[in-house]
Length: 457
Image (cartoon, rainbow, N blue to C red):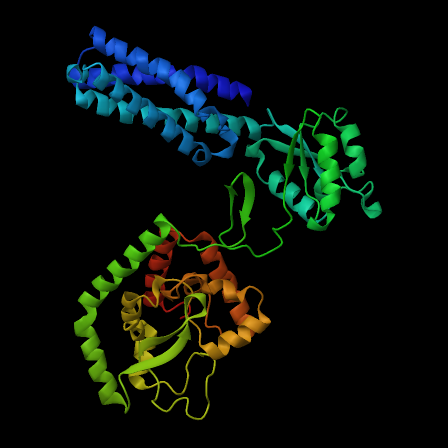
C-alpha cells in the first residue's frame, strides 16, 4: 500500500498543475500562459506537496473505499485554495487573475483528484480479486466471532485480505479447519509462528470475558513488526445505528444512537412535511367525499381515532377513516388485524383495498407524531405483549412510525406473534439502513402494493 501512497504523492501535484493549464485553455482558448499564471500554478504545485502530506491526505488506503479519505482530501484542497487566495490578497495581485479561471480550476482539480482515487480503487481491487498483493492475516480466536470474521473476509476478496491461520486455546479445535482455515496452534504459539507463516496482520477476536488474555497477547505482539487489530465481541448484539468515534483520545463505540442525527434528520423532516402538505393539498376534495360516503354507509364517526405507540414509546392518537362498524371492539376488545374482517363496512372494504383510509394520518405527520415512511405504529396492548416475547422489538421505536414502511411492502398482515417477529426483521433492517434512496424504493413499492393489492398495512 506504500506504493499506492507514493504514487499518489507523485501524481497529485501534476494533476493539479495540468488542470490549472487546462482551465486556462477553457477560459482563454490559449495555452500560452502569462508569467503570473505560471507562477500561481507552481505555487499551488508546491503547496500540494506540503499541505497534503501535513494534513495526512495519504493515510487513505484505496482498499478502504473513497469515503473514508474524502474528508482529509476536501480539507487539504480547500486549505490550498484558501492559501492561494490569501497570497494573492497579500501581494495585491488578485486583480491580475481571472476569477472564472480560479473557480474552474478549483472544481476541475478536485474532481480530477477524486477520479484518480477512483481509478486507484478499481485497479487495486481488481488486483486483489486475482490474488495479487493480498495481506496474510492470522486470527486469534476461532470461536463464533473469529469464524464470522473469516467468513466475511472470504466473501470480499477485493479487500486484499487472506486469512491463513486461526490460533485458539480450545482443545477441541486443535487441528480443525473452521471456515476452511486451519487452527495452527494455541494463542501463546501465535507469536512464534508469525515469521514462519509470513503473517502480516493479527486480528484479535477473543470474547470480552478474556480481557486479561487480550492484554497479554497485545504485550507479546507490540514489539513485533506486525499490524494488530482488535475486533470487539459486540456483533452478536442486534446493533442499531452503531458507530465508532474518539472522545478525549479514547476510542468509543456508540452501541445505539439516534438514526436521525445531523443532516439525515433534517432531510427526513423536510421530506415528511413537504410530502404531507402536497398530498393533503391535492386530496382534500377526495377526503370530503370519503367522509360523506362513510356517514351514508354506516352510523358512527367519520374518523377512527386510536392510541398507538410512537417514537421512544410515546403514546399518540392515530387518525384513520373509519372502515369498521362503530361498535366493532365493544365486545371483542383489541384483536390482531385480519384480512376479510367481518366487522368491516361496505365502504370500509373499498377504503382498505385502496389504502385511502390512511389519508388522515398525514395530519399526524404534519404535527410530528408520525413520519411518511417508517415502521407501522402498534397498539399499546400489543406492544407490551411483543416486547416480552420478541428480542429487540423496542428497536423499532427508535424512530417515528410511518404510514408505509419496508415491512409493509415486503410482508403480509401480522396476525400473530410469529408474523410480527418476521415483520420485525424488516423494520430493524430499515432502522439500520435508512436513507433517501431506501425511502424512494419504499415509496415506489407502496404504489405497486396499492395498484396490485399486495403487501400489508
